[in-house]
Amino acid sequence: MIIDGHTHMESKLVNALKLKYLPVAVLWLDEKPADAVQFVPGRWGCVMASFGTTAERGRSAAFDQETYGCWGGGVGLGFGNCYERFPGGVACFCRFLSTGNETSEEGRAVAGQCAAWMRGSLQEEFLHGERYRKSPEVVEQWLQGVPMMHVPSKYVVFKRLDDISADEQPVVIVFLVNPDQMSALVVMANYAHRGSENVIIPHAAGCQTIGIFAYREARSAHPRAVVGLNDLSARKVVRKLGKDLVTVAVPYKLFQEMEANVAGSFLEKEPWTTLAQSDP
Image (cartoon, rainbow, N blue to C red):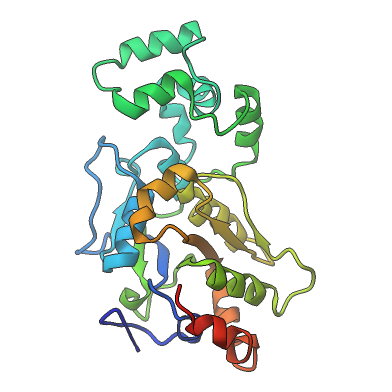
C-alpha cells in the first residue's frame, strides 16, 4: 500500500481511515536506530515537533534521559519527574503553568538567576504564567494524577508505521487525524468492549497524551485509547500539518484488536464510506 509516495506495512485501519499521515509508533528501545534524529543534550526542543516530522516525513526520532527537549517532554516520554529540573523546581513550575512567578519572591529570584538564557516567550510565561490552570494549588493536584514513570529502556523512539521491522513491538500507535477520523477511531475503540468510555481525553501536554497516559493504558488489562493534542502550545507547533488535527494514541494490544475488527464493521459501510471520501 502507498500513501504520499511511501510503501508501508499493510493496515486495514489505515486503509479504511484514508489517512493523510501514517501513524507513528512509540517504541522502547535500548539501541538507537541509525537514522534517528536526536536533540542536542541540554538544548531545548519540542517532542511534538519531532512527532510531526516523523508523521510527515518518516524520519525517526530518539530521546533519552539527556535529550528529551523540555521538562514536560521528559515527563511525557517517561523519564521520571523532570519538573524537578525546571528552574526553581516543582513549585516554580506550578506557578508557571498557572498564574506566574512574578508575585513570588522565590520566582523573581529564579527569573533573575536565569535572565542570561531565559528570554522571549519562556521568560514571559515564567513570570506571568501560561494560565492553563487557575492556581498553583490546582497544578499541584493535577500533578498527583499524572502517571509519571521511568521507561525500562534507554531510548524512547518514534518510528512511522512503514518503518517498523517485523521483530519490533511498539508500545503505542499514534494516529494524527481529523475529526471524522477521530470519531471513527473512538467508535472502533469501543466496538468490541462493554461500556461507552473506552477512550479518554486527559488534559495534559501533547507529548504526555501520546506517552505516559497511553503507557498507563498499555499496562492495563483493558487498555483505552487516548485522544490528545488539546495542548494549545503543541497545537501551535504542529499547526503547519493541519489546523483540524488531533492525536489518538492506541496501546498496541488495542491497536491489534481494532485492526482485526475492521472486517465486517461500520468502516466498510455507510455513513463512514461517504465521510472517508469527502475532502478533509
